[in-house]
Length: 167
Image (cartoon, rainbow, N blue to C red; front, side, top):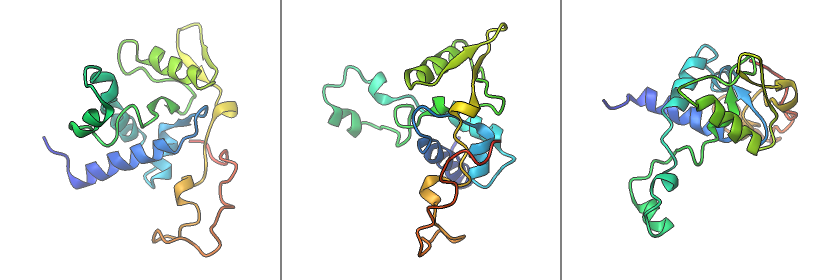
């Protein structure tokens, strides 16, 4: 079933926002939704990430050259260029999406230097006070007015530390 234009816009906006999360930092589904102007859509952020296509480079190991891999029907956004592992729930917990998914996400975060703790129930947690990334606006939108035009001053003063909000 083809996606509506609105659904396609939303999914692409989620992937673009997630691409802005710095390595070694995490944010919440709710914060991505808030940054996109839809604070009541954290579950839709999760659904979008759940349906993120796999990295074609991992699937096409038999393809002879990178150019051939790019020429094949490669999705623009995929798990190789959207750091899905950097999005966790608002409690700092890695959400389970299937067998072994939380373990894979924890391992990917550890590879970036994020400390992931395991509690007595086997749940994975990240200290969002230490590794959290919660800017007021996306870095790509700093200095933009309400119509998406760049302000004259560049507007780099808003949300510069990256930890002003937590959702």
